[in-house]
Image (cartoon, rainbow, N blue to C red; front, side):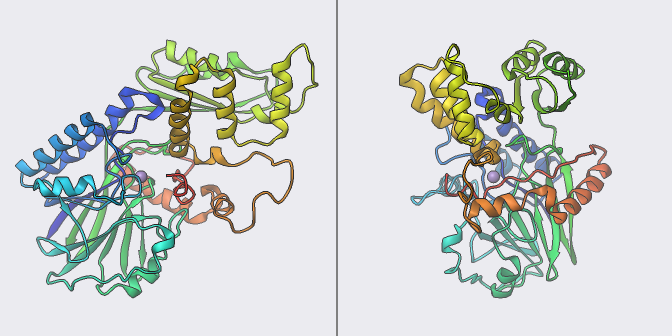
Length: 433
Ligand SMILES: [Mn+2]
């Protein structure tokens, strides 16, 4: 029997919401997974990519990661990994350094044997280079086989990688595909092979509502995949549908009903009610102990184009014109940062870069234009258009996946009802990263 932890999308070094505490959270989640591996005497930790959030992790995060790898090594738990899209570079990988130090094994086509299972690796490859892939793997000498890969595979959300084709063309028959990239944990059977995403270990996006976890995979005649929960920082999600006459006070009231201490508070505002200033609600939450508060008002831009131009209020005139442009939320955000924020000009470039990076990771949908003024600005079949047509809400497969997840999380007693299956639209992010 071989018993491994399948984890991935750790995103160490991600300074989410510009928060140092959040950055530490991503490393903590990795520490937790490794500690569980040691205490449960797991045979190996298999990492499916995106250990780091970007190509240049800070020294602090590298040292923290090294400590974790050393703890695993001291306990005799091998760390097997591949390279994801967030951390990939052409000139060598951090993983190669860890491997040179004897703290990690970079999985590849020749396979690495743990017990009676051979683990193969397939790093993230952009869509444009997949045609050339040979899927040529060294034949195994063990009873079981698994391929560890990073990418968006069918039959899950935002897929652009044909899993059946991979399985048909591969020179080895795999019992399981252990995947990373899609942050939503899920599993399915494709041509007698288990295909599973372990999910991210911290919420890398506010769309990742359900509790975080990793996979425990047992190879023993058959393959058994179960989910293990992680203790991560609490997120409080407040979805506000303001009725007519309701406004900021109602937002305060609803946010105030929650324990906010040290939590990340995500407020989404919609409905017929009055305008709400996001900054006021954010300060309200922070004053009550929230680590971070983010308020998004989906009505903002619609309203902006409705009022009359008054040159006694030039800001309003600018806002109106901007409203007519149908800018994406990301573009509006950049405009606001440039025009109205108090950031010094010399820091603006860095601030914008950070903001755009954060949006790419947290809210890919923010890059979609809002009711473009002229039709035909998004061509049919473009990547953006495809991404939009595959929102979780209209994909029944995602719904099924969520049900499976809920049943599993109920088993381990940390179940929480969830209405949206959060998946990160990384297919359209590739061109930005
Ligand atoms: Mn990722």
